[in-house]
Image (tube, rainbow, N blue to C red):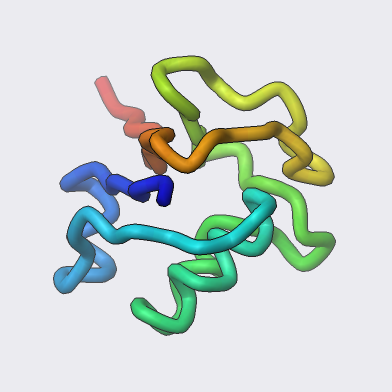
Length: 90
């Protein structure tokens, strides 16, 4: 089963985030599962159209996903899915 990992930057808004196994068959399913564990995280990551927000990146096994709109990138049962919030500043 894939494991979802989060950066510390996201823990600022969702302090209980931790590495979390997921059962979903699609990335969208996985994000839905994360929302059941951490209410509000899905709407923080996705916009009102269900697309990944600009300030968020998702990597599957070290590779940035290609489909930010439909989240159709694939993963395996042993995959690590990293959810990263981009930081900005001077």
